Image (cartoon, rainbow, N blue to C red; front, side):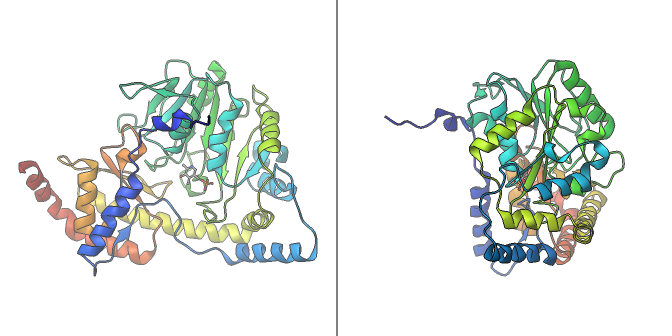
Length: 409
Ligand SMILES: *Cc1c(COP(=O)(O)O)cnc(C)c1O
């Protein structure tokens, strides 16, 4: 008799996106003439750069002329070489340590296949929910009654530590880090990252470093790659994605760096895993990725990201000028807005939706420690930014009285 995996039942998820969708359509019915500003989903808001689109068409033409079938499970050689040249020449990472995938969501989850089932995990909280949910459905961690998990240590990312997670006193085996962080919008400084690398060396742990937002880093004291930290090549795997940087969220391409010099033979295990479970990534999309790594295209991507970052900065400044507490936004398009006293994150979500026609994400959707915040995602255009600034300027001075109203109710 076939039975389903019981691990899926252990997902303690209130699926927040359907709830948000429902509230959104209610608001649309109630106020049909109001433009709703969606700063909820963390997805790009610009069209594909023409040279990338062209590369996809050219690849199609090439396949019309020549037979191109299965490629390498590890990725096109030319693409791996290009990534090495553009990002890793100075960091002594070579192309056979670079693996192409259909986006890093696959990689940050599948990577756990390589480790012993009883490995102890550390996960930042609040965080991108995929790390925790994947560990649960793969049966690696089991929830206890009190919300803790066997085989898992939560590492808090909070106002107390300035959203810079610090290595724990106890020993763990595998550590998920993300910088710049989703949802808090903060980045880990080089000095803080070095503490993690030292910790991993001491305990023979492995760091899984999610660098999905590497292209958004503007601060000089933040590492673009974990391999800028000495000896990280012995203890860290790095994940990079073209989704947020080159607008590939709909095309799907990412890559993972697994150095030969790690203290475990993970490079060869990952090769074996890919050869068994994957036949590689679509040829036209890999060609598109090569186009996206050309200097002209990269310059255009940088300008687009600069625009997003400038909207982020304006919104942050406006919030702060009105006495709001807000984090992130320097090396990130995420703002982590502290909820004024007297509201839960869902109350505050409702307030923003009904008064500002603004969609934010309630912070509790990102796990423990998130419920005092909402996340604003500033993948927006200039018009949305200006509309939001206008609405905020009118609304924020009234927020205090709303708050008083709420607490007397
Ligand atoms: C968007 C995002 C990803 C997913 O990247 P894909 O390459 O599109 O799968 C991974 N990690 C974080 C933190 C993200 O925000």
